[in-house]
Image (tube, rainbow over all chains, first blue to last red; front, side):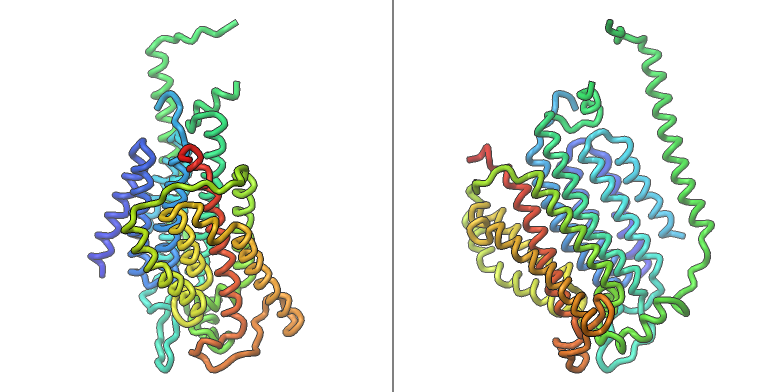
Length: 80
Length: 111
Length: 252
C-alpha cells in the first residue's frame, strides 16, 4: 500500500503546516484535530492496532475538548 | 529514509511554533506536534511488515510486529494529553490575572 | 530619567533582520543535527535476538494473555503503568488545586431537544462499549487506558449536552474521587498481593485461571485493567468538569 501511505503523509504535512500558520487559535485547534485523525489512519496502516485506538480516543476526542474549553475563557489584550 | 525526512519536517514545524510564536496557546500546540512526530517515527521505524501483535487461537502466525515500541507509544500519548491539560489550566489562570496571553506583553508587565 | 524610545527606523529594521537571521540559523542548525543523527545510527537488526524475540516466543506461555501488548504493559512492565497512573494523578491534583474556587454548581441550558433525545438513547451503548474494551483487554486490542477514556467521554457528553448541573447531580465530584481512589488502591493491592503470594512486586498471580482464550484467564491482568480503567476515566472526567466550571459564571 505504498500509494495510500504517500497520499496520507502528504495530507499530514499539509495539515501540520496549516496548524502553525494562522494567528487565530480556533482554526489551529481544528487543524490539530484533523492531524490526529490522519495520524490514526497511519498507525493502522503500520499494523499497530492498540496505538490507533488510543490515538483516536485521546487525540480526536479528549484533547480537542480540553483545548476548546480553554480558549473559550480567555480574553485578548489590546494588540494582536 | 522516507520516514526520517517526514519526522524532521514535523519536528521542526512544532519547534518553530514553540520558539518563534509569542501566543502561549500556540506554544502548547507546538509541543503537541513535536510529541506526535516522535510517536509517528517510533511506530514507522519498527514496522517489519508483520501482522498485528495478537495471537489467534488455533492458528500459527510466524511474523509479528514488535510489541515493545507500541507499549511505550501508548504511555506517551496519555502523558502528552495530561501535560497539555495542566499547561492550559495555568494559561487560563494567568489570563485571568493579567488580561493577556502574549509572551512579550507578559514580560513588559514584569517591570 | 527615561531612555528615549525613538530610534532611527533603519536601526530598527537592521535589528529585526539580525534577529530573524539568528533564529533561522538556530532552526537550520537543529534540523541539520537531526539529519546527521540518522546517518550515525546503526542498522536495524530486526527481531532475531534481544528482548522482543523473548517476548514473542514465550509471551503466551508466561502470562496466558493473547494480546502481547497488554502482556508487555501489565505484566512485564507493570511498574511503568503504575508510573503513568501517578502522572495522571498528579495532573488531576494540580488542576483541581488551581481551579476549585467556586463551589456552587452553575449551569447552562444545554443544546437543543433533538440532540438531547438522540444522546439519551446512545449513552448506554457507549457505556457498554467502554466496559467491553476494558474487560477484554487481553483478548482484543484495547485495555485499561483506552476504555477509561471512553468512559470519561460519557461525562463530557453530559456536561456539554445537558448542562453541568445535570452532571453534578448525576455523578458528583465526590463519586468521581471515590472511583479514582478505588482504582488506584486496586492496582496497589494487587501489587502487594504479588509480594505475599509469589515473592515480587506486581508479579502475575496464577490463580483463577481457566484455559487461554476465555474471559477469565491471564491471571491478574483483567483486574489490573479494571482498576486502571476506572482511575483514568474518573481522573479525566474531573479535569474536564473543573475546566468548564468557570465558563458559565457570566451566563448565569
